[in-house]
Length: 277
Image: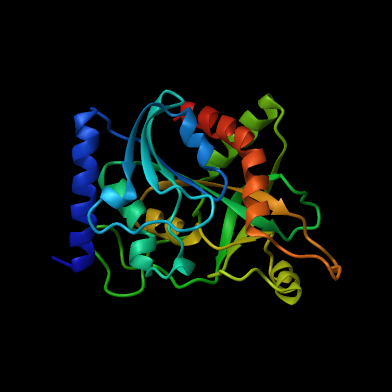
């Protein structure tokens, strides 16, 4: 057996054993980005599985990422949420960055909801905006590089529609009913951990990006490789600048605070969208 597939199978076997003890069969996987972990507090009858207890599993070290799977009920459906993701910049290889997605796929999810805190590139965006991810630009190593694991998906997975159009349309309708203003745009993913320079921001805007971050895209690629339906959302944590003052700076703690302030609206939207599945 491919060593990567063996690692996925062993980790999924542990998670499956815990879930079976609670008779949980997750339909939806949720990835909670920086400062967005409190959605997990809304999950009913939660079962917590610390990453550190899962065989071969990486541990999240980023600000605002607790490092647990939380399984239970949200929006009337069984879900399993990542309360903290794994980032490439933490020093993990892409196999480990995307291992949680592979594990959730192996325990049976059919949908993946991804979220992140992202920097604004589009001049129309404001701090605290929620942006539906309609497409992405990948400037990170592709997680499918290397021998293909044929048991999980095809060698060349199609990425024409990485984010499901039907779910995007549902989310827009739900947001309108709830009075939640949504943006829609393209997310560009970098390795990090350094924030972008002004020249990079302007370059990313010129190639069609609306928001920038350091995660999400590897997870989406692997999910689509597994045939999982994906919906994505970014919280805009800083506004785009045409020029930068001498005292301007990005701060990771401020990013978490801004994302936390927008988490209630995102939680409500995710919950209502899950109800429709």
